[in-house]
Length: 142
Image (cartoon, rainbow, N blue to C red; front, top):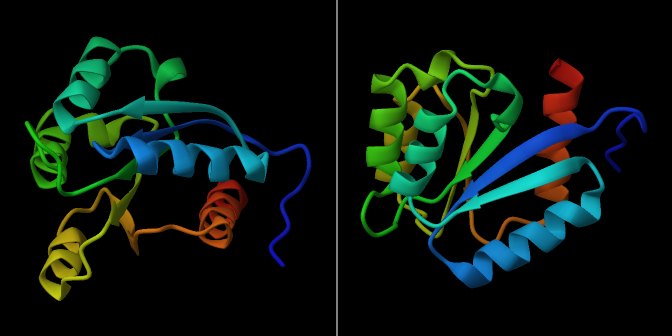
């Protein structure tokens, strides 16, 4: 069993995924951990990048952890990662990005490792135990 100190809590996380059902399910699971105060939700990479660009000087609204889907319309996860790095956002307070994808492809997993911003890769569905592990690792290191 993973335990986390009661007084520690993550201020904000971000889910970037076009699947509304996944967004609802993930949010419910994350809330049930009681380790996150706020969950930001974006339905494509472009929407998220716009938010980050508009708030580039306001560290207080940046999420501490980003969960990023790869396969999305308009701007997919790979394009998001490239632009996130190109715009220097990886130097901000947030820099913990987890890929959360239905893709079990070794090519995708290897490609994800090429981005220094990516901390891990999870195959959907992500279980409560996975979120607890991610959150406790983050809280222990900060």
